[in-house]
Length: 229
Image (cartoon, rainbow, N blue to C red; front, top):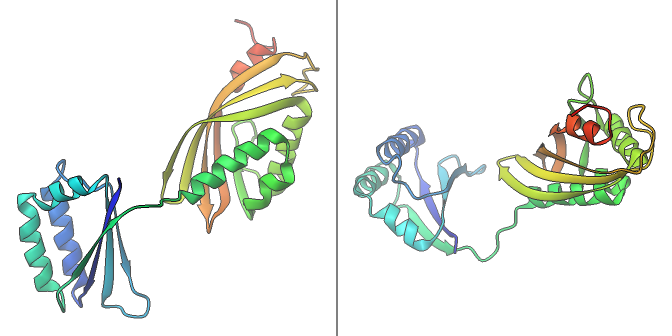
């Protein structure tokens, strides 16, 4: 079970503490068991800081605490604090990857042809980077692009894998469709086709604001009989 430790401290010497933590990270490289660390400053109190450190489990956190460098760093950190820091140990009982869920829902709605609902969680200044287009396009063009694909194919997406980091979610997907209408000048063939690709989406305040697409367009055209073997 994921384990999180909150370290709450007050210090007027944060720059020194920051350098101290950098030293500890360097000294324990390859042996630290933490998977994510975040430091926040209180907006109403510039001397109040909270560090949130995530571990795969309590046992891994204890391994981290037992590193020989950890005790020395802790003593040096206490010396930089205005008062004794407090530690809160938490077992994670709920962990929602909200941006990842929004990205998955976007592909599910795309497969259902629900264009209006697809773009409910997309910003007005959305920017789309698609190798099929000569330049970057905005929200209106992105909606028209999806509508064009829906006119040419009955299709759906299968989400194969997702990786979320900071404000970005990368989704690896498989697209399957039936060619029912004109596609780049190719009349409907009735052919069942598949295509794989990846989309990286950037989020702002829970909304998709930018996307980068990579997909096997050549493989799709080959299945439609346009490109030779």
